[in-house]
Amino acid sequence: MTGTGKDTTVVIVGGGVAGLALGNFLLREKIRCVVLEKHDRAYVEQRQRAGSLDAGGVRLLDEWGLGAAVEGYSHGDLDSGLPLLIDGERRLWKRGDDEEDEVDGAFCPQQILVRNLIRVFLRDGGDLRFGAQDVSLHGIDSDEPLVRYRDADGATRTVTCDFVAGADGYRGVSRTAIPEDVLTCSAHEFGYAWLTVMAQAPADPPAVLAVHSRGFAAQITRGPKASRLYLQCPLTDTVEQWPDDRVWSELEARFGEPVKVGGPITSKQVVPLRGVVFSPMSHGRLHLLGDAAHLISPMSAQGMSLALHDADVLARAIVRQVTENDASLLDGYSDACLDHTWERQASAVWMTQTMHDAGDPAYEGEFRRQIARKNLETMLEPPTPPHPAS
Image (cartoon, rainbow, N blue to C red; front, side, top):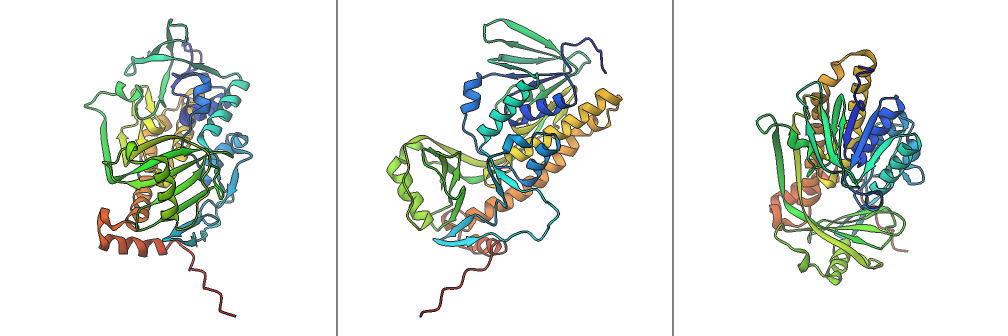
């Protein structure tokens, strides 16, 4: 498909992890692409989002020569070395018996990964257009797809291409280009929410999770000087019901130990926990990836890794099509990614229900609480026996 006379081979809508990873992957294979991002660069690089990568995500970056994107951030077994507080008692996760993976995961804040992917993409000559507003997709059912947008100066621009990659998130425009009678949405609501709080308070260790009769809680690093706090709450709760003093006192109560109050709280939001999968992930010349195609419970910490998986599969499929005129991988992109997504969703639902049902019985009852506690024990090292009295 080389020399088709199009402005570019791939237009990538969205400059988050999925879109930037895809852009970098394609650039390394000398596949032309344009990344359109509606926000300006400063906003994108400062936007705080959840972030940790499993071993598979780190491995993918290494395989594509992008391992430097997570250099300098905590590596290691993201489970075994991190504490879980159960009613105030510190427990450790079991180490896996499978030694197949020699690569460890990393606690890398999403904003840092995005910032590094932007830097590498631009350094290597990538075409990244910030401030692209009013994006619209046309002709995705034809051999002449194109994308229109309004640039930062207010001018309307048109980019012709061979493929469109929709990586503009759950509320983006790409998915709306797929006809409603083609696209299906499968969703699961967990029945509770997280109060998510950004605080200028470092987290040490990088993540602490807590299961308590008052509900789930966590503190996760978002860089050297900030952390995100999570408190399980009813879906009906509002931010106004959670003044700063209540946030800190509730976190301490659920941790069952003193919590060092850090700097100011800069944002709060009540986020319902849910899982969502859209199918198919391909329609004509349009291919969805990342949050545009699926949402996974944040309890799983799989969002970034799922996005990287989609980008990897799509990049390899496009490279095969462009260099060998072989459409087999591209034709199978949706099925391959959906199979992987459902596998991760199954794990995420199990983990989310276990961690939350094991806490406050007001949500699911005492029977489910006891079952969840037994399930939780299968993932933990035995309690440390108390030292004998001298």
